[in-house]
Image 1 (cartoon, one colour):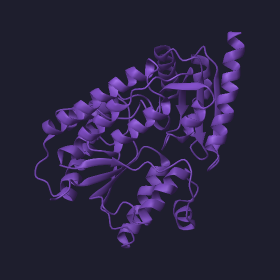
Image 2 (cartoon, helix red, strand yellow; image 1 turned 90 degrees about the horizontal axis):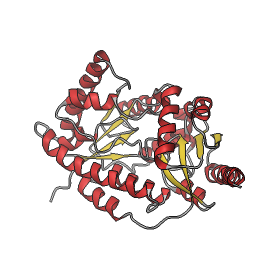
Image 3 (cartoon, helix red, strand yellow; image 1 turned 30 degrees about the horizontal axis):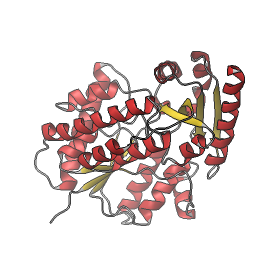
Length: 338
């Protein structure tokens, strides 16, 4: 029995419906907060976010050779650099995966949406080519992805009501980003357990795994929401009838640090704090992932709860920095409530 082909994804911009419509499972490569990196990967990528380096290491080690193809999203400078490196390595036979760049700038307006729709059409052609499928079935793909989107909306509601820890929520989002929609929906629905702690929101860069959230929550906090692309702002669930409609949905996505104005990010964070009834905010950003730090001044001005930030977090120092930030925020919240 032939297994369902998988299309690997680096970044957060891929419209999953396109890969599903071509008969493939979109599988996001997320890397990790911690772990060794090879000298080869570091030299090839240069001064870039260490998570991208770890993803390159995995590819060079053959960990993703089972994929039918790989789509790299141009949603950060690290991912764009990774694509160029992979393209050269593919030309030299070092990487055997077919690799494609998906460039979908954010924002509304007819010219931009038309550009994104054309990129989606080319992405559709790539997915059809690497899977060997016939014409893409957008309607069938929409049905399964819509069901997963519903499961995630339920997860967010349980999270807001204190029935899901932030770490468990991130694990569920990871399942949603890497498994077939039907299997992922079952995993998401299983996450339902009483959680306790001071409700807080996490902003800043993306989280490749849940280890940092677990460290934060061990300090008596509960992460009830976040605005990065591996958490509540992940683009999983929305579907459209065609490339043009998907492009319009893309334009309406939550603002992410790398491609949004600080004013947009601040307004979105303020709304999230209100929605979740969070009593504080933690902002975390890795070294060489500078965009989230640009938003801090506007974010602090937009919210009426304390915000504690740790930026330029060195490789393998994330949990230490997160614990330090969690303790500082917990103390500030306690003092303000005394």
